[in-house]
Image (cartoon, rainbow, N blue to C red):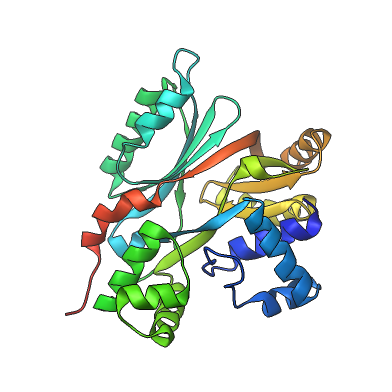
Length: 305
């Protein structure tokens, strides 16, 4: 995996567009090629290779928690040596409100989840610690964009299909929902544009060849120092960055590095940036998409009659 592959993954992850589940259905190759400075054919060929190699497995589409009357947070912790990590993950999969489990090669696990209020947040984090045997964890709230849209029935149906099955062709969605392809495209653009749904590529990190997936978590002294520090960190990691997870208390830099030696080099460089209180660097094993399990929350959505 080279710099262009990483840049393509970054563009697909940060552009807030919905990826196709099959090769050749994307409509934005031209725009992507202009941004990346490569021909449309080259970009299309690279995207196809990412699909056929299994690195990209389609899209994870999830509803903005704000639209559900909920909030979002991340929580990371070390599984106790007295617990079997695989069993802890299986128990986490049974909990409500989790839409991603980030599994690292060591003892660390990261959870991306939704909660209703501070009492619910405390209940969830306490349960994470109970299951893992950890004594403490790293918590941060996730600042999702404000969204107050009231859905019509076709938009509601579209969200349910996308959340449970991922994106398919416009024609397939048209047939399932009983509306025209033009309507599907218009509704999808509206939902994305108003922040009702969010989408990132579903990646199989174990399929990445000639690259080492690594997350660097930078925790900051304050919100003010975070604003200044992140401007200095980005030039350090930008050549390897495919996604940036911006939480309130910290930032997670998802990287793909060419070798192990660079892991310590970049981690040290980020840790030395003024305003960074601490960093944690972990090798990524897998990201487990739990979005299809969140269907029960859809009753919270406001739908016009």
